[in-house]
Amino acid sequence: MITTRPCTSMKAVTIVPEKKYRIDLRELCECLKKREYRVKKVTPFLAIVSREFEVSIFPSGRIIVRDTSDEKEALKIAREIYECIEDPGG
Image (cartoon, rainbow, N blue to C red; front, side):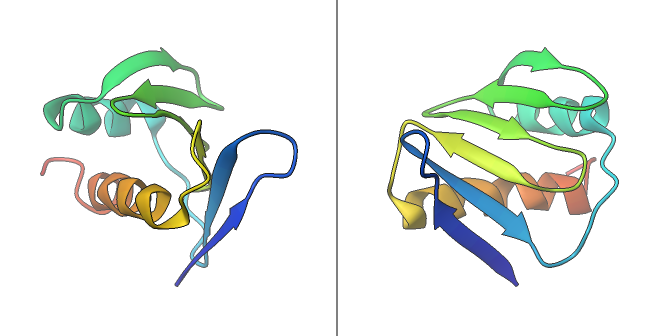
């Protein structure tokens, strides 16, 4: 199960998975590049990628989709990212 909620401090949607992850963000970014995401920044604590929207990804699996308040669109993006988390080679 995934929880979405609008961010109160900026135009963004925060997605929090029920399952806690320990994501290797560099490995995740390699998978996202194959899906036409542009990697803007990656550290052990945060990855920032973009395609339509700028997305911040944390090792715990929390995702912030910026510049949108459309929870359905943000959830669609999050699901694609979670697919890469579950299957980094895919």
